[in-house]
Image 1 (cartoon, rainbow, N blue to C red):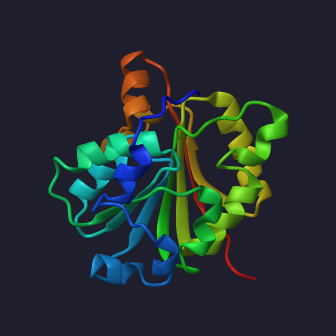
Image 2 (cartoon, one colour):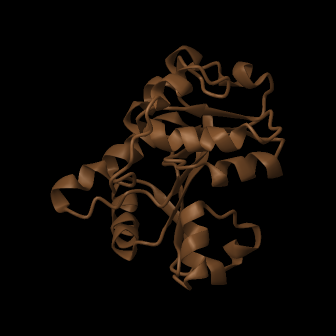
Image 3 (cartoon, rainbow, N blue to C red):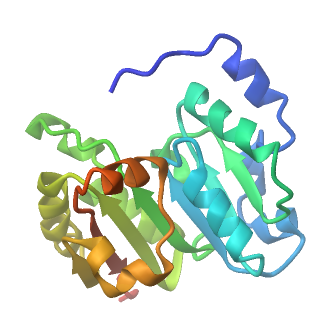
Amino acid sequence: MRLRHIQGAEEKIASSPYVVQDPEGERGHWNQRFNNPHPIEIEVGMGKGRFIMELANRYPERNFIGIERYSSVLLRGLEKREQLDLKNIWFLCVDAKDLSGIFESGEVSKIYLNFSDPWPKDRHAKRRLTSPEFMEVYRQILKEGGMVEFKTDNKELFQYSLESIPASGWEIASYTFDLHHSPWSVDNVMTEYEAKFASEGKPICKLAALRPKEI
């Protein structure tokens, strides 16, 4: 997917009061950043932020961090954030492969992956956010019993994930090929892409995977 760069996006993000500028310095101290002991949930690849901000609005008893590596995309999310009164959410402009240097072991309770880039070519498989390489990163930061939830419209990526996640030692607790006609639909929060696909009648796949126990 080609992204249109917004001139000055990096500078605006660097001066935003909603973005943590030195996330490595918060490692192990994120609850102090939120000034409460509530569980921390993160979305990797938040896009324009509809999903993570709706979660923050619905669940004030949880803390949320939206992560987006592309500055022009994150900037759109920050524009939405300015219109909301939320005290339990921060944003990071970082690459997901660096998360273990940003969060301490067990510091995160849940990770959301929504409509990630499918990287369809086999030679790019390691870049998929459900690849064994990324699942190992998530394992390092999730608490015991922590969970990864993954949604996608791409059946090939979903099938890959159903195979790669257990191969990485994780347990798939549940999954569906039609989210909006499953029990998950009751409390489902949609992303921008999901709303578009739902309006077209396109089925959405979802799975929940449990972090492997330490041996």
